[in-house]
Image (tube, rainbow, N blue to C red):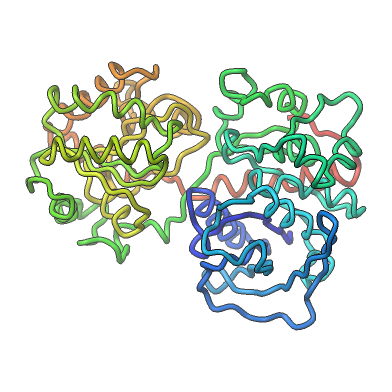
Length: 477
């Protein structure tokens, strides 16, 4: 099948978070299965890859009362997968991927897609849209009378592309908002994502547990009724990671490479991480790592409450890398100054340091309030760091507590400081039993969280979407 991804990020061209890793690594996995994936991204000013001009592939888009020119450029992902870049300096010329005017930028992006598809030599069998930035694409495809099967993937329901009544009227969305929605469907909310949920042939999200959670008021972010309406066409598929990209045996970012048979070499990465972090260097001190957006979703508020007890009740060190809310930046920096021998904080996006944390920390912490899938725990296990996670979303699907037998991490249920600290302390105690700990590391490094199985599931859903689009028949799960 010829599969066209529509997305706002793809590694390594444009990355803010896990969305970029997913779009690129899933495309590569589908290529390995014999399909022909292709991507469309905005051409941000920060994209530095070699770019090819495509002669004669320009389109004009009628947008909010005026006309905008779009030029198509082309590059490749890992020299294999074509990526079309939508060039318009007014909307995408900035270095930042997400900046002011996001609603207009991604409305313009999705509105340009039907015209772009008509210009491509690539004729897709399937359109796969990713997250709210592309959620209006099914609407514009229907309006353009392009009968193409469309899958919409929710990577996080917390980000929906909210807008107010003024934008609704000014953008022209008010004229088409209800046009293709069945009469029996709930009224879509004033956000981009609701249209993707209602109009795509199939809706997916990034883990089975999260697919169940978002049907409830606790996790549904006010879209649970729309999602329940599409319940027969809603699927959860766990994300994978690119095992060629994330490979401790070959990763060029590491101080020293290793695999599950040479795990003793891993200590060099731990010492390098302690040195980089300004922490006392010792292989015998348990070292926790955290690579995360610094947002409430990721449990940063819980972590801040726990730092005092963590210092007094454990002997462990903690290294945190991430960016997010300025409020959290300030509080974490203050805590690091207060406990310089135990806590180190890096407010940055730094891929090299992230890899060193995965390969150098003993324990990897993800205390998320909610987590659609999470990639950090998968990468950490690949590199031999043992996860401590909250039982939610994709964390619940990928990490089982060691107390259950054949587990691969330490899990706490309720979003409380007490339960999180208890899980950390259990992990710390296990760390001191070195033979058993190394066996757990080897076990986790041999687990398969590659895209192979998940890509096969997407393959099945593409066929289902094609049947729905062609016949209108819903296939029961």
